[in-house]
View 1 (tube, rainbow, N blue to C red):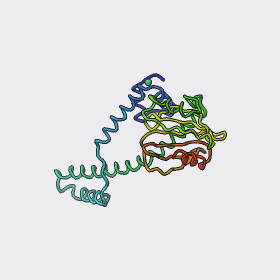
View 2: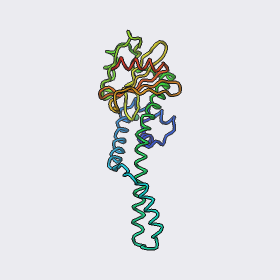
View 3: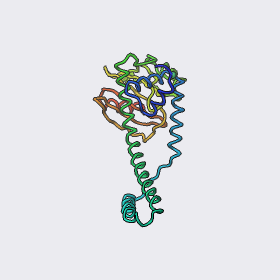
View 4: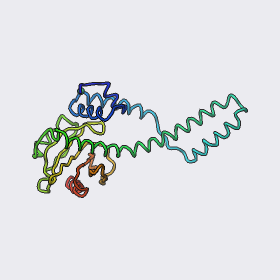
Length: 244
Ligand SMILES: [Zn+2]
């Protein structure tokens, strides 16, 4: 795909199909210009969302709304001037309740979305022709390779003695940013270990599985880790311990 601001906007607004999404993500992993362009778009959108404040719904909100509805319908003949304001208040209360549940849902679905995204990326990397951009078992080759390609320095560990062979690394576009993907092999299984700063939500590992793939997420310091493979969750847990 060629550079396209319109496609980036459509991607941000989640208007693309799966094929287009894959094409845009692939392009952003390779194109610094579009990657930065997209980051700017995202900041603008986040700025707009941040400027619209969220509130906790007060206890008894539903009762209040229902009471207002009853009073509004009972007294609608009483005061023609007052009624529109009352309806506005009801509409505002309902919007408040809707935005509250929307926030809760978004918070929960973000981790699900990420798990889905890392599994999709893992599958694409294993089935496609691009498993690693820097094929090397040497951590001192792989780590510096990321300099200038991502805006952080991922930790790259040599775990050969522990049964995890480093195959190399590549850059991916996930979670709205460029991330480092380290590729290990354990026995005949490929493991993708995605690393990026942020998304810290406690250091404990959260294990899940998707379509037969094991996914393990943990955080360490400022870094967020996602390990994906078709090996057992216990093997991923072992990798996590070695990375702690
Ligand atoms: Zn581009």
